Image (cartoon, rainbow, N blue to C red; front, side):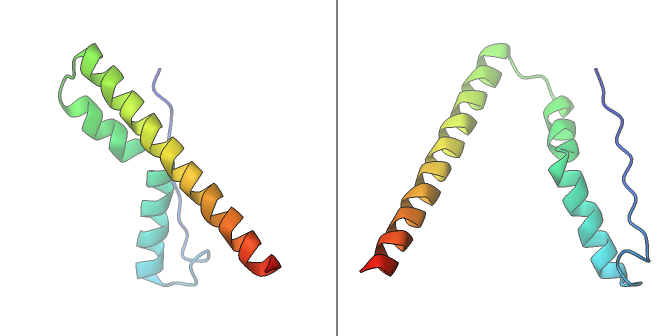
Length: 81
C-alpha cells in the first residue's frame, strides 16, 4: 500500500545554489503529497469525518476550477471588445 518515494535534487540541477535545491526538494515532496499523508496518519480520524473532509476538499477544488474558467472567459471577452 505504501508507495516508494525517493527524491534527488542535485547541485548540477540547481547550479550549486543551496536555497534553490531546498525549494526544489520541498516542491517535489508537496507534489507527491507525502507531508499531507504524514499529517493525516499522525492521528486517527473517523471514517465519517474523513468522508466529510474529502467532499469539502472536492467542493473547494471544483469552485476554484469554476473561478479559473470564469476568469479565463472574462479575459477572452475583454480582448474581443
